[in-house]
Every structure is written in C-alpha cells, then in structure tokens.
Image 1 (spheres, rainbow, N blue to C red):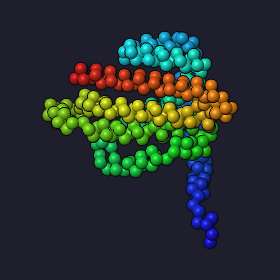
Image 2: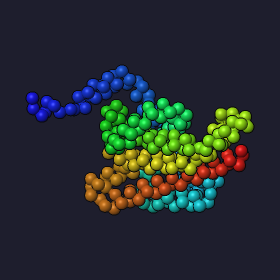
Image 3: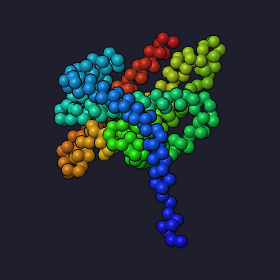
Image 4: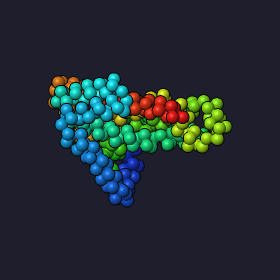
Length: 285
C-alpha cells in the first residue's frame, strides 16, 4: 500500500452526490435560476434604462427623504464616480447582484438569528455549521454552485448568499441575546404582546449590533460578487478579472475604486435607513 492509496479525495464522494442532485432536482434548480434571473434582469433594466444623471438625481432625492442630506450627498458622489470612471453599466450590474444577494441573506439570517436567540439548542446546532462556513475560503463556494447551476449570475448569487448569511446570523443572535432583560420583563409586565415586544423593544435595542451584521453581510457579499466575475457573473468583478488577465492597471484600478464606491453607497444608505427606522419606532413607542 502506497501513499496514493491512503489519499482522501472528496471529489470521489461529492461528484455522485452532485450528479444525483442534478438528475432528481433539475426542475427545482431550473425554477430557481429562472426566478433569480428574472429578478436580476428587472433590477438591472430599471437601473440601466434610465440615464445615469437621472439615476443619480433619483438616488439623491430618495436618500434625502429616507435618511438625510449627508448620506444623500455620499450616495450622489459614489454614483457619480461610477459614471465618470466609465463603468456605469458594470457598477449597476454589481449593485443589482449585491442588492438581491443581501436581501435574500437577511431574509434567511434574521429569522434564524431570532430563533437561535430564543432556543439554546438551535444555537448549539447551527454554531458548528457557521464555523465551517466562515472558515472555508470564499471561492470554494463557487465550485458546487457552478456544478449545479452552471456558469453565470445564478451561481454567483447562490454562493454570495451562502457566504453572506453567517455573519448576519451570528450578529443577529448576539444582538437579541444582548437585549436587557429588565426591558423584556417590563414589556411583559405591561401586558404587551410578543409581537409588540419584538418590534418596540427588542429590535430597537438590538439595532446597533444589527447594523454591524448588515455591514458585514454587505461587504462580504460584495467581495464574493467581485470574485464571482471569474465564473461569468459580470459586473465590476468581470472588469477586475479583465484588468488582471490583460495586465491593464488603469482598468483594474478604476474597477477597484468603483467597487469601493458601491460598498460605501450600500453601507451608508443601509446604515442610515436602519437607524432612522429604529428611531421612528422608539418615538412611536
């Protein structure tokens, strides 16, 4: 027996599993691909159909009324840089990819985080899974996604969701575990319903940590979307890949700075909107 006989090859066991999934769940995977493509195409069509200055002006107005003038200026500057860098379409594609991925990640992680904060056994069950998910290098997630959904934007979205859920889930659980117990007892003593306690006490108290979780989810999702340019996801990731393969420093630098602009845009707007929403809930309470 030599060393090669003792070598462990995960592909030997995973390849039949992937083949079985593709054979038995192909209609489901096709339906997921169709829905994801339709949502992405719709968002991209809206962002690209309008002229760049129209999108920038609309963003200024919406962010001004939703958050404040300072965040509106930051959003306008970020979008203006994406336009002036000559990467407007790629930036809008990346913005659509990250928006969809983060929205789905939050929809998955937020209720699971609340559930994990309520029940210790749930937290103990998902903790090792989260440890593994956050330890695995990000590009590894692209391999099974590509094997199941082929090349394109759909595997990029799936891999981004898997990569973005753990930080949001962990910090959601932490946020609700840190809610002061005396506030919960006061809410129960006043006869408030569990729904009222959740929306008027727990969520406002957990908002600072939730903002950190959302920030991490956005940044990690953006990093994965950029990396997914290697599998045909398009957007700024494709421009970075093109700059590297062609040794075009200018293109790579412009694409990298545009990625920073998109990250700042998403972070400031989401942070401001969440803080404003939390303040409004507290005032109404």
